[in-house]
Length: 196
Ligand code: GDP
Image (cartoon, rainbow, N blue to C red; front, side):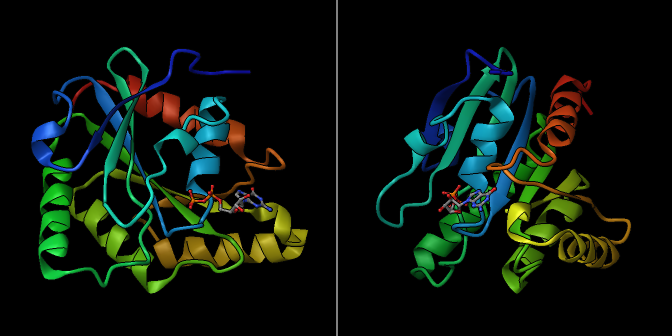
């Protein structure tokens, strides 16, 4: 079932000036390349193919703003794991992330982490970015269908220990549907929340 039947790509922003007006509510989605972020977006919105349409060839780092409903957006951050870009590219990237974090509409960050790998150093940077901005932070341990029940529970426990008070975490599988309802409930809650 489509939770957001009218979801659409608003803009693929390469510069902060292209960001949509800072009003309403938005939730950012982040994760390493191949962590399963696009699949998670499609599962959460119930719109198969929504995130795929935004995949850009090459290394250009675009922030894709999806309008899920009026005044409710999802911001798809580029998959990281290719951080060793040219100097100017990294400077532009940190500027874009700074501007994003200052937006009043940014309510929360959903971080997608492959459950088979757990939190990796590149994820820590994103965690620091989100917690420094005092945003709600929730980790989706993706591809949980690839782990046995006990391995998945171990992964969840270890991740929760590592995160402590800074963030919450859950098991998730776009393919098997695990945890989709729980994650959707959070997304809906954040997108309805009153301005900070
Ligand atoms: P992105 O690069 O983070 O956007 O990742 P994608 O959503 O494109 O997924 C990367 C790969 O992981 C693809 O081959 C997907 O089919 C696979 N994948 C994504 N979600 C799941 C899942 O829940 N279970 C399994 N087994 N594979 C998944």
